[in-house]
Amino acid sequence: MKNSRKWSIRIISSGIAFAMLAGCGKTPAPEQPATEPLTEAPTASEETTIDPSAQPEPSTKNNSLIKHHFNEHEYQHGEDGYYNLLDDGVEFELVGQLSGTCWVCASACAMMTAYQIDNDGTINIDQIDLLNKVYRDDKEEGVFLTQGADKEALGGAGIFVVNELANGFIDGMVLDRAIDAQNWTMEEVREGIQKYGALYIGIPDPASKKGTHDNYYTMNCPEPSEGEFDHSIAVLGWDDSFPKEYFHKPASQNGAWITYNSNYPLGYFYVSYDTPFDQHYDTPLFMSVTKEYSKVAAYDCGQWLTEPVITGKATTTANIFREEGTLAAVGTYTSTDDTDLTIQIMTPDLKKSLFSQECHAERAGYHVFELDETMEVGEYAIAVTYPNGAPVEGTAEELDTALYTDKTSKSGQSYILVDGKWLDMSEEQTWKQLGCETNNACIKALYIN
Image (tube, rainbow, N blue to C red; front, side):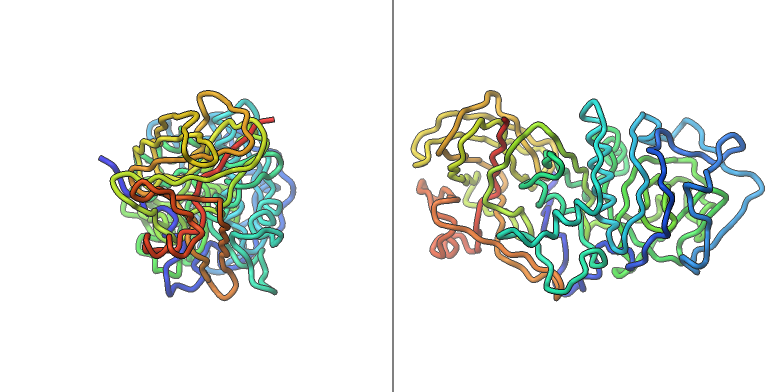
């Protein structure tokens, strides 16, 4: 059965202050000495101890509410009910966040681990480069800071990274997948981590619910308030036997998610199964990037707060591109799991189909569909038919006094098929007929060479 997901509308809810974005309470992590990339997960035992040069000592100077506990016998995980990406050879460097950049660090971790699963080799994504990419002001549309806003302290969300990297490159890489994991079952999350890499999530972050037990940093917040969802981390694995007593607020069950935490305490953070993931303000995401493509042509800045546009049992939108090169793939968003799409390459007058391909998206989110054959193109159109509504960028929004989105569209860029006629999506008459301001269709052309 298909599981409907209103994907990007959950970024922020009307009337909720923008402090709800992941920003970790604006508390910077203590300065850390450089560490080597980790190749396996540390475990607390007599044979393996956490190197004090790589981990901060628990200190009330950093967070006076974190409670520290020491046990007579240190817990050591078993093999059953345990998994950690690092034990499968995935590597990444533990990096401390700068003020409110936890969302950038968690996004980078998700993409770096995914790349190693999908490819032979590693990549490094710098948090400052990624932050500057998302909040750059030399673009026509997308998410922008108001004058004087501090981008390092403001916070953000994983969807910001998705929408920016789907259109542009960072160190020669472009987004090729962003899977929405909202309301997944525990088993689905586990399978996702093994298949896609670390899961970007938002969590509650009250210091009073944190603790240390021996060499384990832990947190259990079973009933968080809205204001406590202000931190982003990356889930690397799980341990079903992790003791319920190892939380400052004892859990109702054994078990914890093993996560990467960029804030104090920097390192591995064990989050009780009792603690819910943020399902509203900061969508759980599996993100990945690729070096396969050399250029992206697009008119939209991503699917933000606008729901898909529906014109009937199926909805078709098209973009007319005027970019020469070798077309290799098409990128777009899907709002439901188990979605079948039809992609057509057409003449620029939208009268003749030159190529058609059926594509399948197993999960809701952003996908890049590789074409069965590359095409040399100049002026042409890409049309996509969706069974559950077409993604559009929608209207500009004021997300907060410090953050807003701007959208633009021009005549001759995007079209939607209504009653057998192609309507220009930049025209107000089209908006009136559809009942919403659409601006551009979320269709991207990816080139090679």
